[in-house]
Length: 144
Length: 460
Image 1: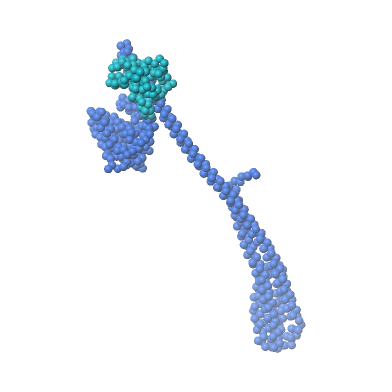
Image 2: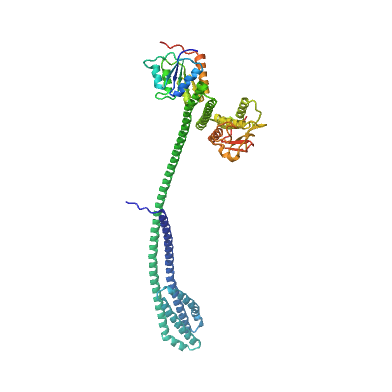
């Protein structure tokens, strides 16, 4: 398992804490950077003191975000040379076909609907970790 | 100019009145014309009859003179002939004179003169026949007979003049009448035509108004329908978003209940752990409810893609899956082959899923459990299918609740489920233009029927 950081973009504090808890419970020890809305995520990714833009292992992105919504964040991630190869997993409670289609069209690598019960949610996080952090080979580092 | 509105009824009544008056005027004109012609003939009748009478009298006198001059009875022939025509002519004249003012007077005088003349002629002829020629000639010579004859002529002339004058005046009266009536009839006809035209114009205007109102109404109905559809859609979207938003806090409850047990489980006693277990069970159940609600609203909102679907094949696939998931159960499944319909494959599959899962569920624990899929006589629908089982059935008294969302006729402990299945079945079938109904009895199994709008092509 690599030790590159994971970025979690999620506005709901419960979901945020539970996701982080589920990472820990499933032995995913990568550092987790949290952004609680789209604007914050963009600042962290592209702002003056951006630290994480290049070597993120995975971005977990909620679609319904205040200020700048998830799709816009995704679009900006894909539009920027520094971040366009980072795997982005949309983690949301929406399940509308329109969302699904647009999300993939915007270049998401996956779309996971958050299960309601924690045991299922934890299972989902475990599988995500297994797949994206252990099995998956991340893209090479971006050009300097 | 200010327009005065005359009610339609009044206009119609006036047209009717004008028509009646017109007919009356026409009748009066015809009558005046007939009377006019008749007045003409009455005058000529009086003149003719009085002439005939006078000629008869002259003939009688001529016969008498000839006889007296010659003594030959042959000359009496005109006299004899006149004796037979005079009474007839006199009677004819009598029946006509009433049309002449003072005609009765003239006629009476003429009648007495005729009688006197005839008496004189008869007397002289009688004397001549008796051989008293001189007495007869003397009697003629008294000129009394001549005087009578002159008087008769004078009276006749007077009568004829009076008749002519009366006829002329009556004709003139009738002519005036005729003219008046014809003019009146023409005026009435013109008025009738005018009012009719007014009515027609009004009728046209009313028709046009009705048409425009109709069009307006149609437009309104269309707008309302669009409005309602939009409202309905909004409501569905609202339900969807509510159901959706409920998931997030629920995940929090569930997650932290689990965290509580995981992190502080050693500090909880048996009861405390049971409570957190109940919280999680409640969350799981609510999660299922929300999912079903979302499913129900999706069933209503999803776009329909109609195609020819082999229902029998779908049923077989679902039953195989049910069997595979629950290999311990012995269920006899009977599927009528070749049942096809035009339907949305995803939606109709969901219908069959629900019905067969129900049948599977409610026959649990039965010996000789049997599920049957087939078609029934459809009534007026092109196709009617049913799914029948011999399971727990239901109380027919509550059949009305069967298809209502979240209505369950069995306890959750008895048979699991949220009570959304048949509600979504009904919604899907209704979207396909069909109907759903159920038959069953407690412990007597259940049969769910559904009709579809279009039958599929027959299986080749």
